[in-house]
Length: 445
Image 1: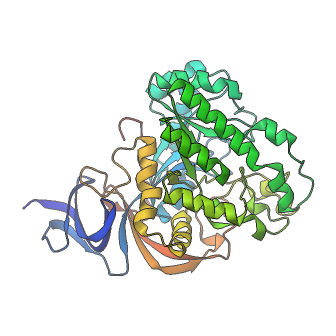
Image 2: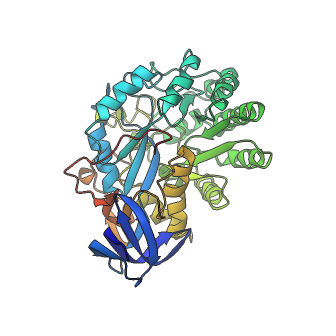
Image 3: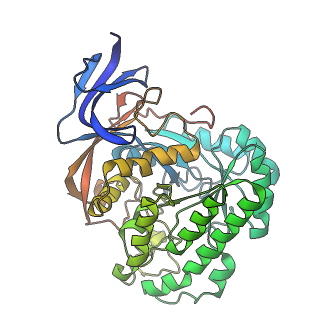
């Protein structure tokens, strides 16, 4: 019998869509065997996991704003990837905006990669950007290894990353279809937002009214129709309006190539519970009502929503305007990269879901979306990326214990279920002292 570099033996292991007891043999950073517990796999190192933990695949977070270079005071590769590792996330995909320059051409991609080199505690890949004027850059960026292309249909919040007009969607999707590229869309309609009531107070209800469901619903309808007309692949980012679920489900039944994600904060919080002036809750699209939240959970259950990602979008404390409680002036973004697994597990188990479901939403499906062929599963041939998770332990979120560069979070003081005991990348346990992450390229990952 072959001797492996490492064998991990677990009484609880999520593999092949189920939870079972088993041993995992690792050689040269890859999973070489998955066998029943007691099968006698031999390793130079044998790790016997306790009864209180579950061996999960390392999570894949396909929606992270690292912001380096250019706005590294908001977040950077070292701090973001250390937070990811602490939260059981072994692969992140970095968004093309909020860094300067934005990743809208090959030269900017090289700047981003050089900034990340040697800093990453987990594996990192990169999205490209789709902005007015860079249609001719898309195929070169695709060839350079980005995992797809992000666009906005409303102001992005930063001047250097302008939105596409809805009429531009078909042109961009037609070009991307030639290389089977993916267009990922911040789907809010600018005209609907212009028609909405203006934001004039610190009352969260006013902020919610200023970013209505209709803005999401109309934008998603336009994305669907553009994908239908072109045959291109499109993905709806950070879905918050449950009204759009039937649109997405019907489009899929018609053969439209459309997918969708949502985020932990939309599955946890409810608009009715957010205090006035609590700008730490501001994100766009916004956190909506409790009934909307429950409909999103149903969308996960029936597969209309494919995956859960953080949309980790930090900023400095000054930009959150906590001193003024001003939703109009505050930066919109929520940081949850380090605590996403525990948060989702807390809410999922209350609704009768299992760790198999959570693994599908936070590891397997994001990897599939991005084309990460060796990530997101505990199966032979995949990278030996693991999260050792104690689902029945718990903790209270202490912002000072987070590795995010600016630990501002609406989760402060919230009790969560599940503790990440350790995270492994390509067969080695991550200690937080030595960056071991690789920079990933589409087609090679």
